[in-house]
Length: 419
Ligand code: PMP
Image 1 (cartoon, rainbow, N blue to C red):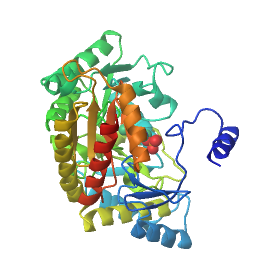
Image 2 (cartoon, rainbow, N blue to C red; image 1 turned 45 degrees about the horizontal axis):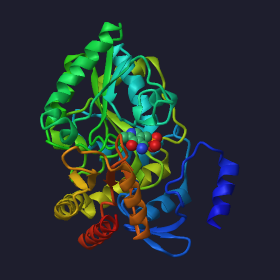
Image 3 (cartoon, rainbow, N blue to C red; image 1 turned 30 degrees about the vertical axis):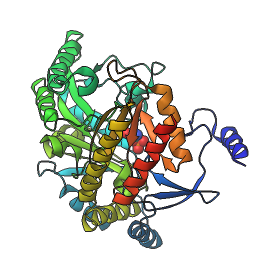
Image 4 (cartoon, rainbow, N blue to C red; image 1 turned 30 degrees about the horizontal axis):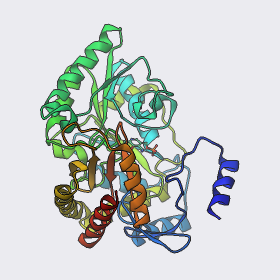
């Protein structure tokens, strides 16, 4: 049955989409941190950084249903839900960020942020990290090196190494700002003026690099000194995942633009950006922005419910607490499994790097793939990342309980013991 479905998918959707796992999972239902496949098998979701409140959260389901049953309009009519939502969202952000704009995907949010940054700075030069992913549109694919050599970077794009203290040495995060200064200077030598530093504040696709808190503030200062804006891509870290509402808060960094998406609607397509109002003046006076579905009443109702649940269930605090428990548990596992070379994370965004040899740090790429498959057999869904695909990316819903965290640790223990 599974094979027939894969064939049908390929016939209908074509060859460009990749499925997760060699034997893909056919999910039919979710509840909290649990997912269920078509045979009724239960999985702990440690992969999906979208349904951050938990799958099918009843308050989000109810908010969507209630608004959909009333009206869902084109966004060029007046509607108050989007205003209530904008107000509630801005209240979670630094006061300097006074406007929000809504889109449907994180890609559109980053694309819009870059258009605005270009209009404001008059420059084109963008600095990203060497394994960044920022989106799927043509303008973002050319600055997303994680897409591989088949998708060349634009001339206006320069990359810097991520703040990887494990492989680059302990002073790597401190060197990050100087690298950014050098990257903008390199672009300038080619006549390319600065536009923006665009980084995921948890460096998720680079391999999860959160520490030490604070280095991102220096990076932002370096970008501004070069004449560029600092755009914080919060599509992965935002909405409580790191134990704080926003990833940049851990660093005391104040972005010029914050882009967001993924967990924003807990699975409903909703994304957007927040920005300092003065940065929008040039863009707003020259261009009009129109997004048919961005900020529609149903999306806004979903977004509002997400903010309510994050607050009422104190999910950022739960992410901090259960995340610390997971980090400690992974540390204990590392004492018994030499393959666990490095453990790092903040809240429920955790990276566990697998190596063949702790001295040489040779990436355990094949072993990581085996571990991902063994975890799936043991009922845990998870992905791997990094330049050698040897970093387990642990991103469960923020409602994860301590017992579920222990189940993850036990399953990982068994998977690693099995080799
Ligand atoms: N930025 C980051 C950091 C992301 O991880 C992603 C999606 N993986 C995006 C942007 C793009 O978001 P979307 O897929 O919603 O367009």
